[in-house]
Length: 362
Image (cartoon, rainbow, N blue to C red):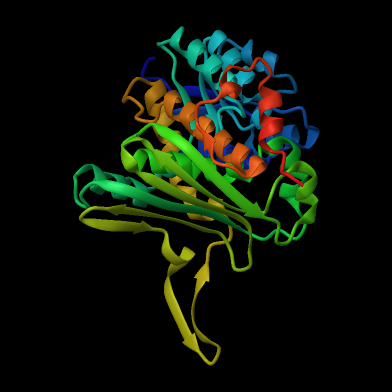
């Protein structure tokens, strides 16, 4: 890659896709948002009218055929991630794909194998919390031995309740609450604990507010425990029903101390005291909490594509997050502890594994 700007095509301009597009167009150095792709008319209109993109496509293969596009950013349904990432690599494009990499391990491993055939290309999965300044500081503290040996991570992703039930409509393709929400926490736990091998998982959950999830074997509140090699543990909580706002937090406990990231979901440092009590404003959603992290993430992707620095986040990390997330989902369905390595990894029909993982006993 020369010193010229990286020419990027974005694929998918839904809620998060638009955020990524805005960051690439206006806030990311050394790149040009040169093309956009979506099968949705209104999303293509948005690319033209709001972002001034002149090369707009309804078909992904047409964008990949453009020889002037250096990299693609995939913000598409998870079921498409693996095939689209592989197609990008085969077309000679760097690729960024939103998490999770896929909803089954065989698809993850297909991407891993294709990336290995193209070592000159960058392939990155969007685990955005690794790029948050607070999480980076916490991991640096752990790596420096400041809390001794880390042995327990407690992490949660809790979204404000959406009475319109967007995620209920999303449930058929989301992979379930643990794959959609907790996959971030899973990756953080492995990162903080030094990437240990996961051995087994147990999960349970409940439907507190959204009975429509039962049809898909999903829940709106879930708890999971994962055992790692060497005795380390992780505890995950995922919720779609917070009344006050978005609340992401992580606690890392070591033999000589602990770290807590994201306590209380405060929007700012202002605490109000009046006749109604003492309170602070809360975060509205995940993007408000991690806006700067999304920007750092894209800057790191562009820098890696330009050969300026190597990524520390690997496709292997994404594969392991999916492997663990699937075991948690299977446990939710079976009501029993589940081994992380299992026959689903070798199944030819990955969709069947995902479906089985989401069945909840009557």
